[in-house]
Amino acid sequence: MEAAAQPESQIVIKKSFASSTFMRVVKYTGVRLVILFVTVVVAIYLTILIANMGGYVDTMMRAEIEYNVTQVVAAMPNARNMTTDQKRTMTEQMIALEIKRRGLDQPLALRNARYLTGALSLNLGHALNMVSDTGSRTVRLILLERLPATLLLMGTAELFLFFSSLFLALSLSRQYGSWWDKLVIALTPTSSAPGWFYGIFMILIFAAVLRIMPFGGMVSSPPPENPVLYALSVLKHLILPAFSLFFSGFFLSIYSWRTFFLIYSSEDYVDMAKAKGLTSRDIERRYILRPTLPNIITNFALTLIYVWGGAIVTERIFNWPGLGRMIYQAIGFYDIPVIVGDTIIFAYLLAITVFLLDLVYALVDPRVKIGSGSQST
Image (cartoon, rainbow, N blue to C red; front, side):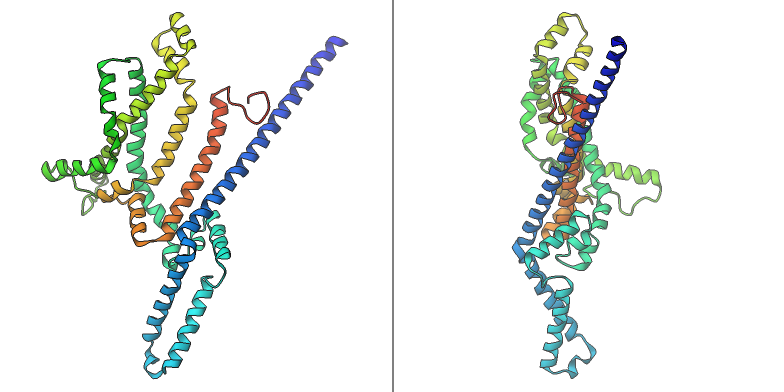
């Protein structure tokens, strides 16, 4: 009887433990989602406040409305037959209607709340109606139109930079103090210059002097009709901007990862593995790469987010039709809808990435625990 009851009690304990673990994970997930959502809301609201400059942009909008309505009234066919008072009355009525239609007659707090509500729902046409109706309605289309070019440029440069520097740094960590190691350390200060700095020199050398590369753009003009030739043209235009971004961070990235791997290579468990006679490849895979996997995943995830932002100055120099050049133009023309729209989507991507990283950490690292319990997931 006792022998039969003992397994049943163990089953009950296991079910209770599994249930408590599940509830703890659900609770932790819910709390994290709420915290991240509140953070995104605050960040977006502050972005709207800064972009609107405390209502200054709304004042600019009012002036624009007054100017446009005055021009419309003056261009009416029967304007010559109207008296000055009639023109003034009609102008004031049309201005009042337009201001009411755009919600500019409401208090600043209500206007910002309306912008925030629309922004959270990604209704950029409603949330970012701060400069002109035409611009605000096309914000989403503008972002989607420029996104492929940025993903092509930034994705090629940043992903190649990430993986190449990672594996080269791992190789250098095995050759500490060698000639290659000293060379990388000596060249690390070259990464202090941004990508556009190297881009200017590459344009001068390969485009102006050698004339083997195009000065800028994404494709030749006129674009080739053949898909293969079109792809080759895009690839040729991609080389200089992608390599300038890659080279600007290459040596610094290698140096950072190399130092990181050297720290983990000096741990006691690595020395124990060497004493056991394990090969260098097994030591790297089991005792160096595996403990550093959360850090590698974090850097990779943040790299993917950085790809979205684009390279503002580099894209401008190479006349690359991506999000970076779009933001540059939006800043120059003070196009608030485009600027805030790009910031909002970036905030959502960052929040989602942080949330997913929390869950990934618990899967790849048994030391990371979910919730306040004493057991890891």
